[in-house]
Length: 65
Image (cartoon, rainbow, N blue to C red):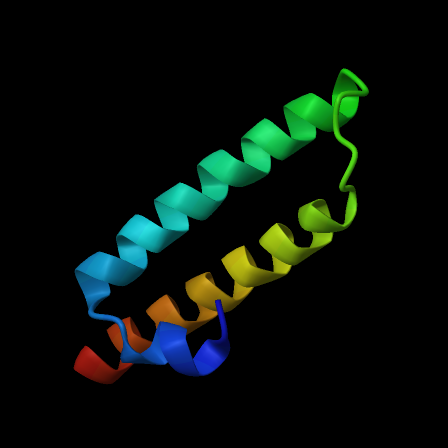
């Protein structure tokens, strides 16, 4: 997901996206460890999207305080 799209999400939607990305990252790591993962570039993409989402969440929480 692009940064612009993430910024347009509500706090609840953003939290759901973070949970979803965390689960996806876990599954990809598991597949990578068992040598079942063929698209290793997804690991990097998911990790970065998760980091973007967390950054935007912290920015939104900081603005409310």
